[in-house]
Image (cartoon, rainbow, N blue to C red; front, side, top):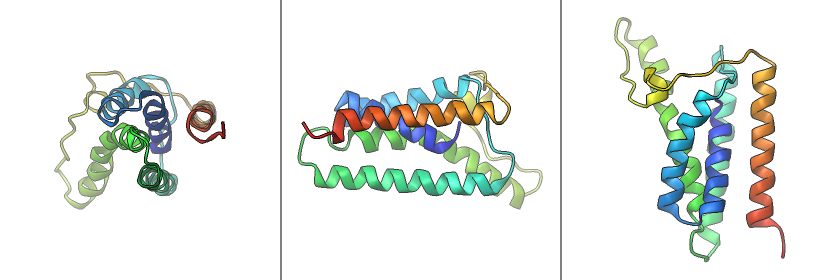
Length: 150
């Protein structure tokens, strides 16, 4: 799954949960569930870099939302989004360091990255459309839960 998809689902869990610790655990678990769903992954670095930029911007927005919202659980969306995307850091580090040190492999520990949880695959464009629908659904859910005026 794309990083922004993981961040979106984790943030939605945080908006629903209203507890940063619970949202973080939910986000971490959601990563494996999403990886098991057939989806499209990048084949080249450029889309991955764009995704990293979007994911970082989304996390920054969620962090700022937590800083400006005095209500309890205001960091829940950030915690859920961050922990949902965090397992992919081992993929990024592996990609970078494996290219630098030939013959050496960055260790993978997250279950969907080790093969313990089967990693689903769907060809482009269907896998892209699936993730776009998940992202839009999550953003709509977050808007309705957290941002819509009452």
